[in-house]
Length: 251
Image 1 (tube, rainbow, N blue to C red):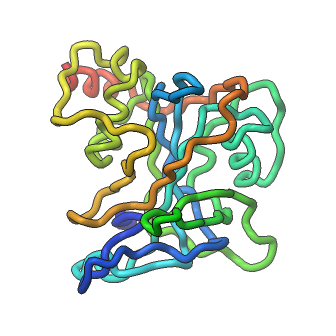
Image 2 (image 1 turned 180 degrees about the vertical axis):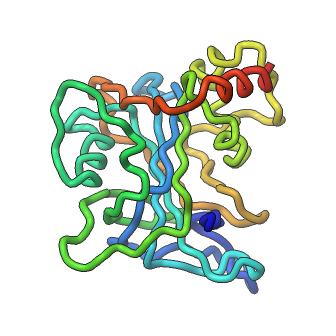
């Protein structure tokens, strides 16, 4: 049975304009997305290749849409693409996998699919966003509930998945389309959607959901800007026919 899509990490109460956020603190979670966003403007730290991890809070839910009933929150965090042991992404991946890994070699990032962990959520000062501030290992006692969402991943290489890309919200697609990695994949592609890709500090995590509902966003940048980048391993299972079809559709 296909798992239903989450409707986002924060929303408005169905009867008022009040935004709904998951409670602050530690939450049991599962990894439901790994997305390569490509090289993005890093401001004073310079341009950096960014990736995004998305977590479903399996024990925290709300009604985002009356038609869909109660659903789990989904929260996100962007990282520099670095698996260095002192980088934020490196720390998170080690915590999720529950083990350290060699400094050399590659890690298949799809091994994170549906992995249990705990994430710490804090609210922004204005109370509008739920930020992922820490990722730690799953609790040693008790079981982490199953996720409602099917894991998806997106890689900006020959394994580019058109269906996954089209399932993302407009702001995130525009950001990816603006990256040099995407433009190298599809040099003749014309933007499908109007509008300028949003800046890093704007709310851009409005996942598939009804209008007015906004997903939790991490507004502050990572603190690992000076780490040497170590590229996570790309997915290798995509079929050649799918690659050609994706490229053809973009030209």
